Image (tube, rainbow, N blue to C red; front, side, top):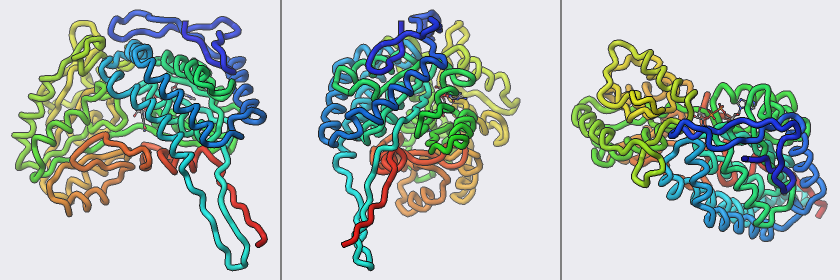
Length: 474
Ligand code: NAD
């Protein structure tokens, strides 16, 4: 049974409510999950409020708090297998990706933000009047964190780590499809010495349920949300009602541009990763691939070859690169794009598995009209459209012709061009000749439907603290 974690202890729901978490590879239940109602949301917020208002956490020095967060990172690394199995069972993610990427990065999130907060400088303002002014970054209070299912542990820690490092307390609601790793992490936090009430986890659904109850709760001071753009609109409305700052990391429809002077080996290899990593269930996916007409035939041939070579299947096999989609609901959503495909679109490889599994094979589509669903909407699956372009100006227009703006990639060996195009793209991140390379100090977030606000380094500090000005008579 996957329980809530409230005030430093495993808790069941008062009314005994539960739901099932399904392993999308076996298509069977692998555990029961406690389902929070108003009583559990209230208890979690009350515990976080008490820990913030009267507990030691916000009052501790950065070094002491940082040492506890480093201990938590150590424990995450020691429990790599338990955490890997949890997310892999919950969402069908290949276990190798958990071991090599997601769990190490979760530990790194705690280490980075612990050190970043400790090393942060605050501004001083020598004033003409002779007064001395300076800034303080005070913890904001109780943070409501709502997370998606695609990188469960990794994205939860991306929110929780800076919130905790800056002295806040947290109530986390993981996605209903991926509850397991959050409770394990909260247990490890208590073991590491995080005081009771500082990190609380409640499980449940979104609309009309735990998610909505949490974001509408009068006891919270911040909402940090990652998920779909439409859900983001509801969360923003909840924040507006209570005048609580909201950080939104939302959907994407990333453009990936391959110019005629690109290093083709690198472009094929990175473009494959950009769309097929995590079975395309990545907000940053390079799902719109634009290739210069002079190289498109060779590129498509090599790219299709790379897609066909991917190892698809059982996520528990060390070699598997693509498992099933995360749930039956999501599988049906992605399959719907194939049902709606424009008659002119050609599927060069991949497609929906016909063996009853929830697998979608790495799919490459050409000749889809620019205004068709597959080119406009976020598929969130291993499906890419490839389209030709002639000029730099034209492709900038094509890339920016979307309401989303999370990220873009471009491949070119012409340095001037890469700077010029990177500046012209409407996106929160532009990767040049690479993909998914992150510096946790850099701003992360999107424009348009891809989000509001930025997280990472000082950007997380701005969100998770209340900057205060102090002015002293000299
Ligand atoms: P989702 O919006 O359906 O759900 C996300 C979370 O919100 C879940 O925990 C859900 O229970 C909760 N929720 C849903 N409705 C709610 C409501 N009305 N009030 C409060 N909580 C509510 O998203 P998902 O399907 O879990 O995740 C996939 C989406 O997330 C994709 O669009 C993807 O692009 C996006 N995403 C964005 C980033 C980013 O950093 N920008 C990262 C990962 C995923």
